[in-house]
Amino acid sequence: MLTDDVMRCMDAIDDELLVRARDAIARRTLPAKPPERTWGGPGNGSPCPVCGHPLDVAEMVFDLEFADLPSAGSVFQQIHVRCFKAWELERGASQPRRARAGELDTGDLRE
Ligand SMILES: [Zn+2]
Image (cartoon, rainbow, N blue to C red; front, side, top):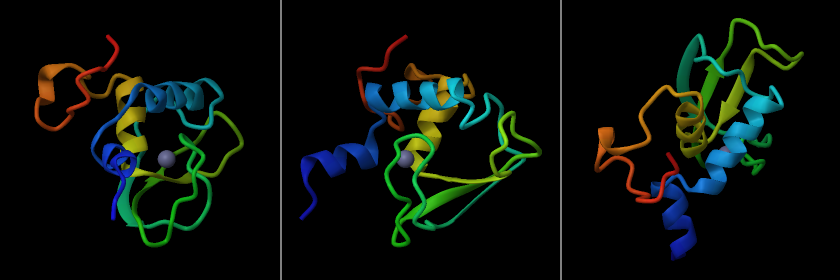
């Protein structure tokens, strides 16, 4: 049975995740620009650059490809779907407010 917490993580992007996404950009773990390519696939077990939790092989995650990263990191990066969304919000790629009502339902997004 799924706990409320898991359900919340599946559906919502909470403030903590946004803070983590912002931190990942600040630490240059992730760039503040969109990836060259984005596709989906199973996780590879490595830690997510945003939340730090493993990208489980049973989970569908995003594969990102960057032309180059400001850090010496890999040009390939996996990331959870919800962490990807948080990262997008933090770099201003999509509107955190009501622009996508129904898709984002946290009701408590900052700014
Ligand atoms: Zn994550």
